[in-house]
Amino acid sequence: MPRKRLPDRDFRTLIAAERAKLAAADDRDDVIMLSISGGAASAVAAHRAIARWGSRVVLVFADTCSEDADLYRFLDDCEAKFGPIVRLRQKNDDGSDMDIWDCFDKHGIMRIPKAGNACKASVELKQKPLDAFADKRDIQVRAMGYGFDEPERMVRMNARKGMTVLYPLVEEPVLSACELLSELERIGLRPPTVYEDGFVHNNCLGAGGCILSGLGQFAAVKRLKPKEFDYARDRSEAFFEKTGFSVLRDQRGGEVKPYTLAQLEADVEAGRDFGQDWQSNCNCMSPLFTADQLAAFQEEKSTDQA
Image (cartoon, rainbow, N blue to C red):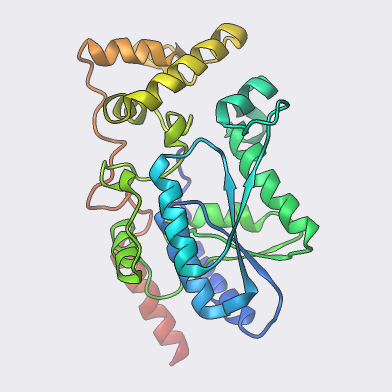
């Protein structure tokens, strides 16, 4: 989903406010629920949170049951390093674990138009279970692995009522995506293997990948994870036949048309080049704010303190 960049002044104000919230949390004793996702960012955030707030931190993993197999290895390693991780799974009517395709079938939709086309499975398998866990235990403070390059996500999360949200990764030193992987190794954790393949997120790759990831990533999944692609293709074809909604859109020729994974597969095999935009690079997921902008923020902060 395209990001709407915050103006530089708003960015500096946001980061300063978030750092102040971290400092304020030091003087309290309430429980902090940190959502650990199985990716590098949330793992480093968990490390920082536990180092800062100790036993006040409760780690929770909302499992889509659609994840890459190595994510669960990584999660086990995190648990050995950080302590217990509560794992939440949703069930189908027959008692089996619900994955993203089961969720789409149950609700008859993939995206939620009134919520900016958000993924229905993300809401049902992640957001709602995490909210229910926090509500049941009356947890008012949460922590997330959002970094300095995701200010618009912080703004949206902060707009949710009834909770305070902390972002340990905005504290110094701020880390790029590549630096997050190096930090994992420094902590003593072997990063998830999907990053070695060039994926920038460790999201639902066990079921073919995030439905919001776009043409390029699904073409990469076809090449790098053919078994997982086949599963997504078959489940999405059945969903398309039932509802008329496809995972992807074909926008060639100025006309937007449904584009199924079966069609993408045929185009890949015919030699269509989907490019490498899906892949990480030395710019680390093209962060919204450059090192120069962050340096300017630090200089402004130093001047204010003086």
